[in-house]
Image 1 (cartoon, rainbow, N blue to C red):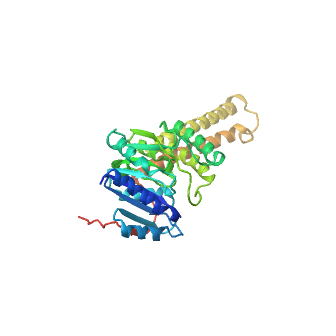
Image 2 (cartoon, one colour; image 1 turned 60 degrees about the horizontal axis):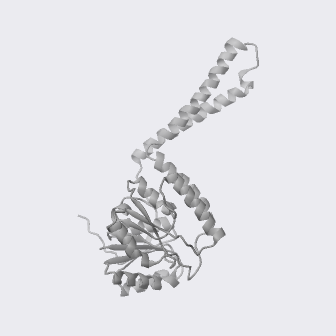
Image 3 (cartoon, rainbow, N blue to C red; image 1 turned 90 degrees about the horizontal axis):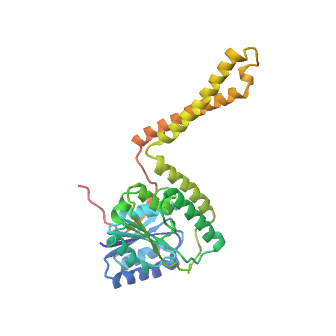
Length: 321
């Protein structure tokens, strides 16, 4: 199979039929072998019923329904696990991503050697104040911290070589940073392609301003995990030792001052240096222990992703050897 199209969705009943017909038209005109995987992230409208109806008519359609809304990251991760195509294309279900971009994205992965290609919505039809300006700030911060020169990290339409999605785990709200996850996993040949952005035709956006706050917090998290995730002692241990030494030097100063210089002065516990020394020694010890515990957890912990699938469509059961 050449292409798997992975589409997470939440309450997009009005757009699904039109989206699938558009994708099918592009695939057939380019003679691609393909599958379309819809992941219903806990919709409470008729989205799943429509997916079932479409799957009965089209064998290319597969579907997964979550028991509740777990988030876009979990939906993408479930789709990646099932995808069988040489190239995996992700799209949003709201018709704002243009399926006509699929052939070019496929060519960039298959014939130009890219491992991941991210779309860039250079011209957007979103609100300037609520989306465009915060998005530019967010992407600037992501470029600076990750070192990946992309203009639009959160663009829904992306293309991946199959092995990339099989070797990354998309958890929490990390779908915004899949290129960073890929780079951290060793897939650094990342490209960008300008894509056409469509104005939303049905419904309304599922994301508010809170996504930008969460996005920046996740960015800090992924920067830290990427830099120190496999060696937490390098961060916590280094700062722990520095802070502990500061506390020890204050303690040494207080001791020398009390014993040899200011022998008849006020009590050590009445001096602010005493409390600085005490706090630094305690904090330094705790930071060092945090790094030590982190090293132990890394050696024992296996990454898990939490979502409950209530229904599936068009997915064959694999036999265990």
